[in-house]
Length: 369
Ligand SMILES: Nc1ncnc2c1ncn2[C@@H]1O[C@H](COP(=O)(O)OP(=O)(O)OP(=O)(O)O)[C@@H](O)[C@H]1O
Ligand SMILES: [Mg+2]
Image 1 (cartoon, helix red, strand yellow):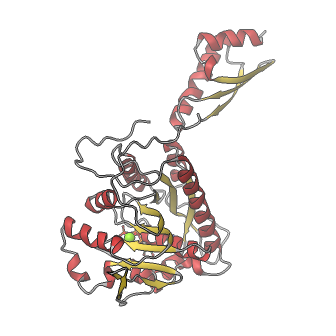
Image 2 (cartoon, rainbow, N blue to C red):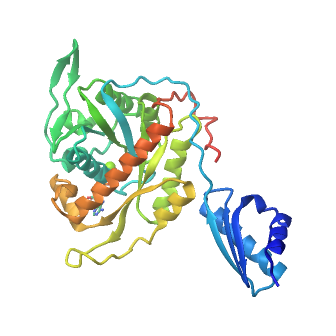
Image 3 (tube, helix red, strand yellow):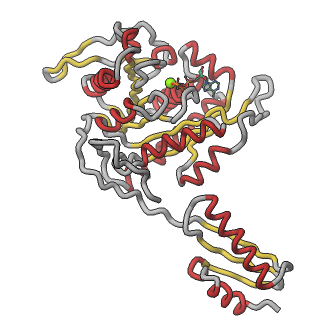
């Protein structure tokens, strides 16, 4: 007969007793609540398999082990960088919208989040950091506009363009935009810096930065110069996109950069045809982002469906999230709320935003978990 004390001795013998918070034995059923050493999904799975094998070989195959494995409490990310970046007066939170991969919908997500946050009553700015392929002017119907110059406290600043309650700047508004495609890293970084620091953004709750694809010069320059509060990562469920996302996240996690990742937005998570709005087709695979997010210990902020009207709305310059009482507006509102919650948590648990100076990329290593 299986007894509680036999199980207790065995848990000690296999050296997991310190992970077990509670256990019960009822006939052949053994209920165990325990905490894994790591929040990573594969570690939890490994622990589950090892426990099942150990119990089966010790007490026999007829024993039903009912395991509940919880994640450990994560300590707040330690921020050890020296403060080097200058705060930007008036701007509360700077959020980088990023992904390792191109074409996953960063700009679409950034535009929709910006108008959603504005609808929620926040003061919002959107900076198009894609010097080589700006999309903000088209996506927010401000193509062909030119920022005027205004004098603020004796300084000449450019005034962001405004539409749908969002202030925005993009290289696409400047007459030299066509030449920008041949700019090298330093020129591009300089232009970007001017759009951040030499602009009259006024008071903003959020400045969203729509980053270009990849993990190159522009990303490092922004991270170097601008006190980014947090990063939001966009991915599609496809395996290749997810692999690139890991690279993107690793960049924000580098010890010398250490920008908290607020969460992951899964774009094109499923397809919903207009005529069958309740149907969901997981054409790029299901829940890849969830598993990865769980594995990396970051939250999923939202799942945005692949909908024809999102693409059409982007092309005509009126983000789909502006469609009153639509499913897509509802999804974006929830996603924006989750982002704000994650941000509040970040601002409560971590020291104030710092911009970090990267002197050399050598020696940067992914942060140890
Ligand atoms: N959820 C969606 N449903 C339908 N179409 C979408 C969706 N998200 C993005 N698209 C479309 O996919 C294309 C690429 O999107 P977008 O330009 O936002 O990607 P990106 O990641 O910013 O690309 P890049 O890496 O070039 O900057 C656009 O035509 C856009 O309208
Ligand atoms: Mg883009």
